[in-house]
Each structure stands twice: as structure tokens, then as C-alpha cells.
Amino acid sequence: MGALDDPTPRGDASLPEPRGDASLPEPRGGASLPEPPWWAARRPARATLSREAIVETAIALLDREGIARFSMRRLADALGTGAASLYWHVSGKGQLFEMIVDRLVERAGPPELAGERWTDQVRDWAHKTRAVMHEHPWLTAPDADIFPTGPNVMAQSELLLGALRSGGLPDRVAAVAVHLLPLFVAAFVRDEVSGLAGHDEAPEQVIAQITSWFASLPPERFPNFTAIGPQVVEVDWDERFDVGLDVFVGGLAALTHR
Image (cartoon, rainbow, N blue to C red; front, side):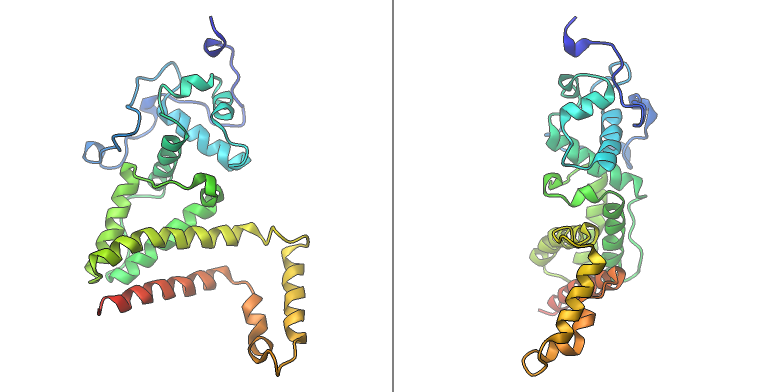
């Protein structure tokens, strides 16, 4: 028996127990929501190892350790198997991350957008996406950058694209906007959760230093910074997100009249 077939349990006790295919629900919509053709086909579960177990354990591992330490071998160790066994169920890390994102979208709830106006629906999509990224901030890392096309993502994205088009946006603008909106949300959350990590001092100290510096600037040379400098650096992330979203949605609304 080779090393990859070693039955000795090696799983991480702090991570969820691997479960078979029947332990998790099918994607919302069932067979009406096809999976991308480049994904590896669903395989029968081997003992306790299944596609669903791989995805759930990967999410738990990423939440606990972050994306920098993540690897297929580390995931295999957490599952108590060999890395080669994972490729029976997924074609590689790219497909795995697509399935991870799709699972997180499924967890967030049914595909629906609140609001009667298209602008409100776009805002609702953005707020829901921000909440998911807050819960799993590693989603904003460059190593997690994928073009998600799983069935649950597609169902939610179809609603977003439909909202954009229903507002009278030209098709080309709607197509670009459905790409730019998640970029805005991801960039915002990445800045929000980083805590000014590039500085040596604590975030509160950095903000205090910059505020003091702005106040000391000569007003004849920097009339704007001396007038509203504290508002530039004071942090109310919810307010800033709403302002940024208003700018984004307002800009799109202006394009409906072209």
C-alpha cells in the first residue's frame, strides 16, 4: 500500500469532520443550474472524502489560517488523506476556489435582491457581498482572485445583471458594471480589514499622527486640508462604503440617459 493510500487518520481535529456527498444540499435550483464544463465531474465519494467535504474543510482551513498558508497538501493533511486523492474530485486549486466561492454564495441565502428600483437592488447586492467578504476576508487576497462561474454565483449574478439592464443601461455598460462592482467591494473590504498593516504603529496612532499633521499645515498653502483634514482620516467604514456605493450607482444612473 502506497503512502497516498495510508488509512491512518491524519485529520485536524479543529476542522469539520469530512462528510459524504449526501450530507450537503445540492446547489440551489438543482439540475437547472449547470456547473461549468471545465470543472472536474462529480465523482462517487471515496469513504468520507467527497467534493463537499473538500470544499467545507478548505473554507474552515482558510478561515482559521488565512490564504498565505493554504495549499492542496495542507488541505489533504486536514482531511486525513493524500494530495493526489483531492484531484479525483477537483481539477486543481482554481476549480476548488470557484467551488468555495459558490458555496459561500449559497450559504448567504436564496438568490434575491431587495428593493423595487434597480439602484436599490444593486446596493443590496453590494452590501450582501461585503458581508460575505467580511466574514471571509481572505476572499479579497490576490491569490483568491478568480472569475467565479459556479451555479449559485451565476444565479445571483444573473439577478445583478438583470437589475443593471432593467435600469436602462446600455448593454456594454451593464457588462462592465457587473465586473467592476465586485472589484469595488473587494478593494474596499481589503482596505477595511487590513488595519493600515503597512505602518509600524497601531492604526489609531497612525490616524492621530496624520490628523495632527494636517492641522499643522500652513492654511495659505493647504486651505482644504486644514479645513476638513480630520474628515479625510476619520474612519466610519459603513458611511464610507455607502458614499462609495452612491458614487458608483450614481455614475451608472447618469449613463442611462446617454
